[in-house]
Amino acid sequence: MRKPAFLLTLSISALVLAPLPASALDIFGWKPFGSDEKTASTAPSSTEEGTAAEELRRGEALEINGNVGDAVKVYRGIVKTNGLTAAAPKAQARIGRILERQGSYKDAFAAYSDYTAKYPRGGEFDVVIKAQFEIAKLYLGGQKKKLLGVPISTDYEKAKDMFEEIVKRAPFHKLAPLAQFNVGQALEKAGKPSEALGAYQEVITRYPGDAIADDAQYQMGYVQFHEAQDGSYDQSAKLKARESFEDFVNRYPTSEKVAQARQNIQALSGGDVKGTLEVALFYDKTKNYKAAAVYYNEVIRNAPGSTESGLARKRIDELKSLVGVDALRSGPERAQSGDTALARRRAQALVDVASRPDFNGPPISYPYPTLNGRPSMRTTPLGPIIEPALPTGDPLQSAPGSQPAAPSGSEPLIPPTLPPPPAEGAKPADAPKPDSVPSDADKTQTPKSK
Image (cartoon, rainbow, N blue to C red; front, side, top):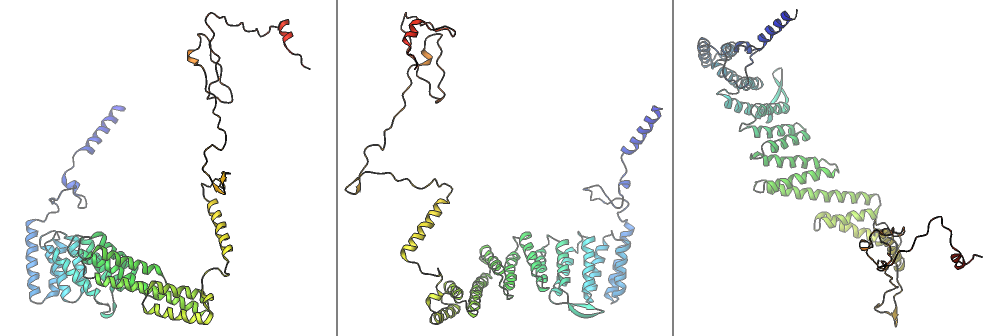
């Protein structure tokens, strides 16, 4: 039972591992990776090539005689029937060219897109990309959207899609950086400033070495500049616009737009002054004269010599005569005397010192001796300094068999004082036994406790 099963398994493995012919691998047009050769089943035959070339000449003759409709039908037949022949890319390019001459720009662009998708290595690829770019420029310049053949509105969204198609199909073409820049232009005209900023930033990121990158950086500041002038008091828009123009001046100092960028930076600074003056006028109108004076002084400080600073200075003089100088002064409501202000500063200083993490308490004053009311130099220490006694003896040189005493509990690191070594010939005293009873002589020498 096992042997037939083993033979069956071996036969199936041999069939699976056997090399397949090239025709079997070509499934749905698939070819091995890295193979540029056409297989026998997909490569057009010489007969197909000849037929397609003959049809292409017939379509060209119809086109020359003015029968463009019939010519388009012939060209489409070539692409449909013999799409892999050398005549097919030429036929597809001629379809787009005829539609472009007829004014059907959207259909012409679509025909050119079919060319770039099917024949990216065709000989007419560069011409087709240029034709697509010109059609997209028409929509960017105001080409109207048609409804039933009647122009109704400008289609900037279509221009954006066309330029994005060019960048997608030909990202390394010489027109790709300008096409990406025009994506931002189309979004800007369509009223989408945020998306336009993203498109301009894409130009700087993908094509930093192209000459159009400096225009993209300037245009980013220009879009933000207009956002800052929409009447709102959002200071972040002004700050972003100023940063964009400053980046432009720093990155591209030789650009012809540097002078205009500097003027825009100055205009943005002047806009801040105008906004400050408007705030001052608001407080002035609500009779909050102290706050109004603060903003008037801010205008004078930031833009001396300007028209706004002249108006602010004039109004401050009027308020002084109207409510008095004290009412405009910013500071404590009540004037403090010198002693009160000094005490307040000292108390605040103590608080500031005590809040430090390295604060160790108030300073300690020592009673230094004085002579005739003046401090004299101290020549003696403030108190007696007692040094600990040095250890005597060396435990390493003690008598053989003797052990050093254990260190005391109070100072474990300082060895105790050892007794002097015994003299030569002297016998060590007999140690008393633990259970021995003291003699009568010892009892007589021991004082009695009362």
